Each structure stands twice: as structure tokens, then as C-alpha cells.
Length: 505
Image (cartoon, rainbow, N blue to C red; front, side, top):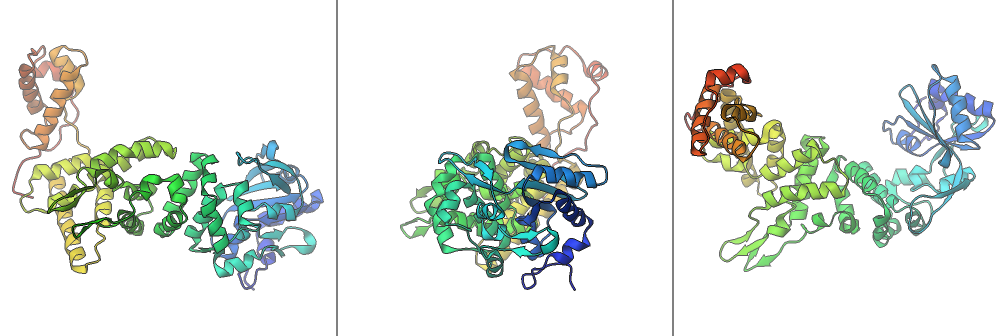
């Protein structure tokens, strides 16, 4: 007999008897002389044959005491983290993360999702669960070990692939509006439908999400973004109008306007296609965010030009400027992750300009330099941006990107330009002219970098120094240290190979 419970045979007893952790749990339950049940995610995922290492234990009694009893029976007597306010405790048992809670009732104030808690029964605890598929319980008690307790037909909903609330949807979502996001997220992760009354309540109560913290919203949103087909979750968000509450900039992408026979594409659904295309190539959350935001400024830059049609000039630059504001509102990290997304949004149109036969090595150098370590991600995004339904056009566009890849590799192999910096630094410039930090240093550094990228000078100290002297003279600055004295005092970094303007790439 299989140890794994299934939708057709939901008997957990063989599984509980097969694992030492469950054996110790049942012993702890017996010694404490309480009722206890596995509940929620582990039960759901076991029935769906999905991996899960998080165990939620509901105890009709003190969950904290049961946690401490269980910990005392484990090797090393692991530390128990206790949250007395909610009567919960958590510990690690090998690969398992185990959380204990006393069965409870909850009630909520209208302006808060923090519940008032009182002791309750298993039924009370299952009533407070968000969805029927998360209210499934399994007995850890000796006489009924492994029995499934399913008061709301969660098993049937798993079979039907349906998200449904155990109580009236309005009550469930009014108590804790984050459950609206959770329901949409579960549907996206599991490829489930949402029961009509539940979905209608999500729409009607969407404004309640305004009392939920940005961190909790973005946590659920990120789980949708990293799902296998993220567009499904975003379509649920869009048609339920939840997206209007949490992400209005994305809703603004929707719609296609026609003028004088010219119609632009619906940039919302185009964005979802790009997101799915990226998802087929990468699990990277931040690359997927770049797909979501790559056209985010198109509504703000949309113009109709007589005889030409619709234009979105500068949407990549304006979009890059919008990224920090959106990240800040969602409380996403304002660090290198945000800068990675910002860079891809800004550069996503650049590679296509490199398909021309007349493109220069310097143009290729610039995209290599500006993209840096994000170059491969940028090319994934650019290929994903090809969403035309015309197979001949799609083939031609993708072949163009193959040519871009080839050009980039040729220049990069000869120049080693990824993340390059001029060997002459601001410290050298200040020492050479005997000056303190000021705008002149930035001017000189920028012009040296441009000269290197254009192939006018080699990136070695001697040619950097010669150009610096000339630029300083133009700025009425006199040199205080010659090249030998400067290099002796401030040794330069390793000199890099020379970008030289050879044949057209």
C-alpha cells in the first residue's frame, strides 16, 4: 500500500507511521493528553502530491505546552520560539518547520486584520480558515490516527480544482481582506478556478485591501509572479478589479485605442504575454518584475501622430524613473534588485537597434557596458518582448536577436568590456591637479569613459593620463604630478584590453 495519501484514498495513517517526526508528534500528543490535528497547507499539498515541509498543528488545549513537550523528545532539544499573544509556538525538527497553536475563535474590528482571540474547538479553528482546501485536518490522536476531518468538503474542492471559502465569502474576506489576495494566489499557483460567489465577494470587497500592509500585499503578489503561468493570476487580479486597488499603473496599460484606422496593441495583455515568455526561460523574480514594468510608462507617453500612428517615445526612460516609486510603494527592496529592474526597463529597446549591418563596435560596446552583468537577462527580456502572432515576423525578429547575440559576443571577446571602468580614477585626477572633489572630476571621468567606448583611446593608464591632461587644460587646470610620479603615488588598477574600432560588427 502507498504511504502517500491521494484524493481517491485520503488515508494519512501510513504516512504518519512512516516518519519519525510524526511518531514523536503522536507520542507528545498522548503524553500531554490533548487532542491535536495536522491542518492546512501540509494536508492540502500531501493530497496534491506537492512537496511541503511546514507542519501546522492545532491543539485543543495549550499549543505552547505541546510544542515544549515535542521539543523535549527531539535530539538536541531544539529551541522553541513562543508567541504568547496568539498562543503559538514554532520550532525546527530536522528539515521540518513545525508550528503549534491552540484551537481558537477569532473576531475582527472593521479597520484591522489583527484578530481578538479566544479559546475554541477544532470546529472553531476550521471555521476561521481562509479556504476549504486549507481547512482540512488530520488526526494525530491514537484512536483516530490519520483520519481526515473535512467539515467543508475541501477534499471535493481539491478534486474539482476549486477555491472556495468555508463560511460566507463576505464574512471570510471582511475578517481578513488579505484572504482575497491569498485566494487569487492559490488559484494561480494550483491552476484552480475560483467558486463564483467567492470571486464575486473578492470584487465587491476589494477596497478592504487598503487596510492591509504593503509588505503582505507584495508577498502574495510575488508568489503569483513566480507561479508557473503568472498571466493567469494577473488576469484574475484584473477581472476581479483587485488590480485597480493594488497596482493602478498596470491597469492603465489596458485597452487599445483606434484613431484614423490606426490601432495600438493592448499593452496590458502584451505585458502578460511577455511575462509568460520570460517565465518559460527564467525563475528569477526580478527579471519577471522587469517584464511587468518594461512598458509601464506607455500610457503616460502615448501620442497620436497624423499619418504615422501611435507612438510611445521615451517610455523606456520614463518607465525606468517610475520603478523606484512602484518598488517603494510595494515595500520591495530599494537596492541592487530594484536597480537591476530599472536598468532592464531603461535598456529593453536598445538591443534591437543593433541588428543593422552598419552598427559600429562602439554602439555594441555601450550596451555591453551599460547592461553589465544584466546583459543575459536583458536579452531574455528582449526576446520575450516578441509577441506578434505573425509567425514569419516572429521568426525574423528572433533571428535578428540571434545576430545581436553574435555581435555582442564578438566585441566582448575582443574587448572584455563587461562592467569595465577606466583605469584612471577620481583619486588620480584629484592628485594630478591638486584639487578637492568637484564637478571637474566628473567631467573628466565621463569624457575619458566616452573616449574608451568610442575606441578613440585604449584603456591603459598612459592614454588615460594623456587625455586627462588635455581635458584639464581645457578646464584651465594645471598638472601638479607627471605620469610617473602619479603612478608611483597611486598605483593604477590592472590595465584592460583595448577596444579598437575594427570592422563593422
